[in-house]
Amino acid sequence: VFVSNLPPSCGEADVRAAMSARFGSVRLVALAPARGGGNSSRFGSVSFTEAESATSALDAGKFALGSRSIRVQPLVLRRRAADRAPGAPPARSSRPPMPPTRGALLHPLMQSDTG
Image 1 (cartoon, one colour):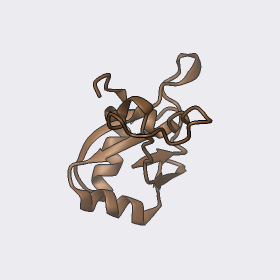
Image 2 (image 1 turned 60 degrees about the horizontal axis):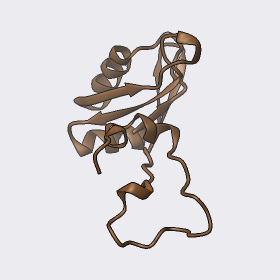
Image 3 (image 1 turned 180 degrees about the horizontal axis):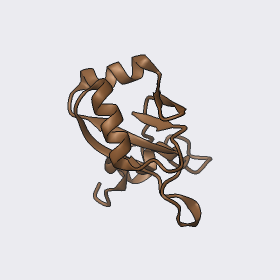
């Protein structure tokens, strides 16, 4: 899932603890690095070990973490041109492919250099 509106001082351990306490076992937390060398940006992605936990988080839509209301949304992964099946036609031949979303850049599947 994609989480946003995180407190600036919030780290991966804080997000993991909050999400696992409310929704279930967390497999992976990835927060976007902050510009200028701060702790983190105010968004990231969370992967759960069970699909039901992710569904519960999405159904909640938001939850409190400190003084902030954290938004929870589906993480949308866009396919890169290199990830398409061999011989598959391009999505739009007249335009270059769209760049991945902020959350997709954090997702471990999108960070892989292998196809």
